[in-house]
Amino acid sequence: MYARGRASFISRGVGVALIATTALTGIVLRQAAADTLEGALALAYQNNPQINSQRAQTRAIDEGVGIALGGYRPKVAATISGGEQYLDTLNRGLPPGNRSTTTQGVSTYQIQGTQTIFNGFQTASKTRQAEMTVFGQREVLRNQEQTVLLQAATAYLNLLRDAALLDLQRNNVNVLEATLRQTRDRFTVGEVTRTDLAQALTSLEQGRASLHAAESQYITSRSVYFQQIGVEPGRLAPAAPVDRFSPPTLPGALERAASQNPLITTAMYAVDTQVQAVKALEGALYPSLSVTTTLQKGFGSQTNATGLETLSGNAFATLAVPIYQGGAEYAQIRQAKETLGQRRIDLDTARYSVQQAVTQAWGQLEAAKAQIDATTAQVTSSEIALDGVREEARVGQRTTLDVLNAQQALVQARTALVTAQHDRLVASYTLLSSVGSLSPQVLGLRVETYDPTVHYQQVRDSWFGVRTPDGR
Image 1: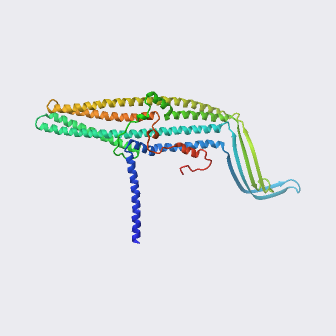
Image 2: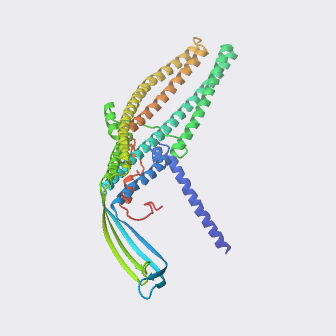
Image 3: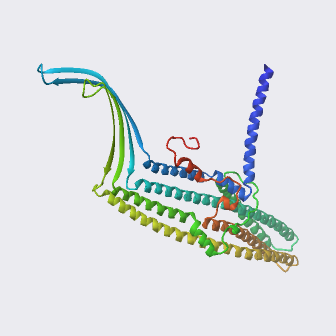
């Protein structure tokens, strides 16, 4: 018995260990995937709560079409009533004052169905309005996906830049420490003055201050990375620009943005939605026709003491012609038309905004490319200058200050190059987002893309049920 109990304990322990190992392996794999820009973007697309929240909102708006389609469907209601009925009846005739009293149970069962035949095309307009709202929400979701992917790419590239700058500052401090040791040795033998020693010490302290600032910035970028990607960063791999996915010319970029940028397409669907809203309100001015059928079964009677059982059925057509309802419907139509005019103005505003964003992103990308060429040449020249100043300092033609200045000039040039390379990568993603093409499909991310049409087709024609397709 002890052996069996111990074996069971060991088995449970092995099971727990396997579960823990599997979970740890999953975390490690996610962290490893996030060490490349493509992997980090895939994790952000899949797990970012802002995207998941917008997906839930899209699924909720899908139900608006089913609500609108309810206007085409019949409405059926069943009514059951029952109770005790007391009747006290005074009858005419002989003998005078003939009175009868009865007490009986009365119950009624009724089924009523109503079908709208015509309501001024209100149902059709409301259905199209709901569909336009769904299409607009999909564009809102696409815009949210682009925003998250751009933020994730920026966070990755910022951390990559700050890691490079941190290494650069560490190397700079190491070089300044070596310079300070050499200056002290030379000061001991009388080759340099106390001023040279003080200048070397000052440069070292400045370098250490820059190192602390770089460490602080790196820690901040790590926290932003974790917020956007959802895992701690490892050793990040270099990233490549995405210029190949963007149009090669500015006019081409503006043309694509005019048709694909989600801010513009969302505004377009908002105009279409409001057009249908105006038509739905105008439908209230038309006549409406409906058919009502009723089937009723009664046991006992509330008015006749001798009635035991009744069965009745009827079908009526009702035609309602609105003549005047206080003027509220006219005010609502005018209000909706003004809102429609506002939506059209919003569309123009979105077009101007997107045009400005594309132009700005294009200019930033071109400037970053030119900056890389300039800073690359600056780094090369600074390296040559530093080597020359050091050689001249050895033979007494340059001072320690000249060497320190040349070293700082090289550090600044390398910092400018790293920053320009970062700006060039971020600008390429910004341009791709501004034209509306920053998506997992375009980037070729290895992740299952979310298709909003799947849920829409699942719920559009659903007549019954309260459970959602995902089981909630």
